[in-house]
Length: 194
Image (cartoon, rainbow, N blue to C red):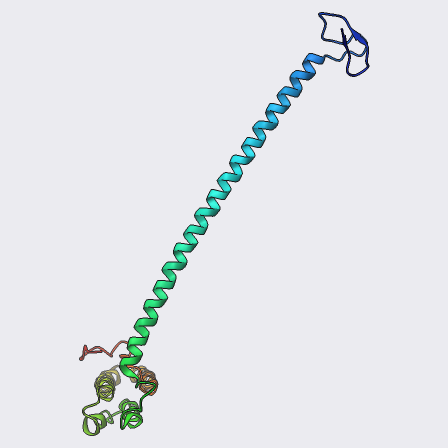
């Protein structure tokens, strides 16, 4: 004996459909099973999607960690290179500065004023820093003298004068800061040392 779940009426044997309300209980059970299977499939799909997202997030974290590690190594190398360069040209922090250190910087800076490049060659011929800037001043003097001669013939002497002013300011700045950098464009014309 079976009764309808919806209205409670008696359903004769061999029938699945309620004669009173028309509810087909077998079809409803099939629909419930299908919806349960669909829900299980959706749940499995959602879990797969979550696992995929977690894997992508893990890969991104791993890539970020590798990038950060490479960046940290690069910065350490730059700091070591900068420290070695600084230790090479600047006096030790704990010790006293070498004798004539400031005056050599002054002579190095004066080397960029035309014809004063000769001073470091005369007064501090054993100081590599001052001699480096004296050679840069010599290059500047030679290039601008040749440029003035050639430029005056074509009416372009003003360009050479502007470039000379720029190079003088750049060179004096490098010498005052204690850097041994070649002048832009012309610094390595005759001397290749650094």
